[in-house]
Length: 496
Image 1 (cartoon, one colour):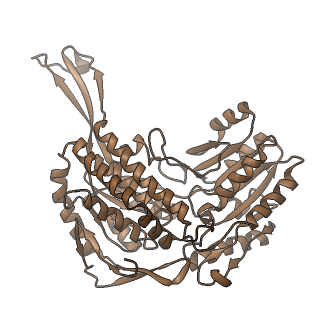
Image 2 (cartoon, helix red, strand yellow; image 1 turned 120 degrees about the vertical axis):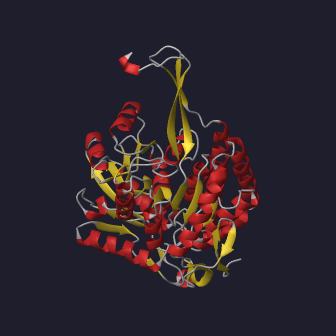
Image 3 (cartoon, rainbow, N blue to C red; image 1 turned 135 degrees about the vertical axis):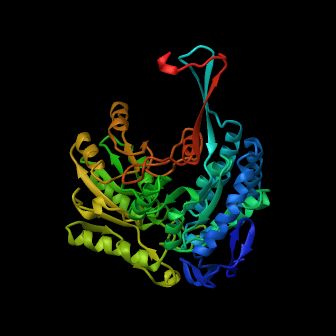
């Protein structure tokens, strides 16, 4: 399959782009391996997808939700049967270790199963009228065509977070995956049609940022869900705001672990390694800062952290001994390296890593060493801006209060964590930390996808929307309140 030309999937039919152009995607662990060639779509492709989606929506919105659920159940079964294949492709597309890719595909399965269950629980509300012989019912209804703009770091899981609640609610979708990881989204749509999704209910069109902007501007696309940078998110928000269009934004993060003096050091060490260096730091929830309360064990702990970071196995993710894969592109690696260089110029001390890895088996990939900086001050760029790479900044503080203040001292508010055995301080922190996700004695990554797990952030991390769990349904549904008057006379509400 890899190395082929992949066509747009417009409503279940494979089609060349009207542009007649393609772009190439290579394995970030081996820039000589072509993953595939993909259509460089334009506005004509989008118009075709919208036209087909509008027709499909007329039927899909009236399909009973439990029947819609059956398709998600079947898609979960197909994904489960193809789990190993899908994970290997995902690893080659993003570079992440195979064990992480397997976890991501499992998240797709879990997400489909959860929202399939919601097909029998699309609850509304009933209320008491202030008048005699009158009832009030509020129900959820679908909105229409949903434009889904996804990121490259989780090219299977993140689209599934959007696809499943959108479809179970009765909407139809058009997915634009990142040009840096287009194949996994293509396979998601393919498997939905294998599961019996009616023609027209889902499309995937490949392309660049101009295509995403066109989706946001299109009057017939009623919902936009974007996972991406804060800069792009603000632009999309402006476009949608001018059109009074529903918009869900999942954007950047500058996440921190607060480690108090009574922290379980062994647990803390494991949490930092996973939070900061898992997925090569390319998660919006990755641990970018360690806010360490000063104690007599700080020096020895940092030495252990350096040793453990240096011992992490780096390389092609298909080799299961490797724990860290490459960065997504040469350009992104330069960006991460520039962050580190500026931090050192600002006065931070580089104690681990801080260089590209380009020799031996790593010469053809975009690998970067796990990096640790100390003497970082809260006002430095490295302490405030998202790096999106395997870079950890250590900030030492004197007290719990100072730690909380510095943890909150950023424009982002996605994920914060605290390690302490003091239950009182732990619970106080859950009220004081300014983030949509807060962990106690666990790192900043590891959000779940169902039930009460609502994924999303505060401040510049988004616009208050949530993905995962039942709150995701709020993005893809609109409420209708129905008044039933069986009094057989005119009642004038408050006037009566």
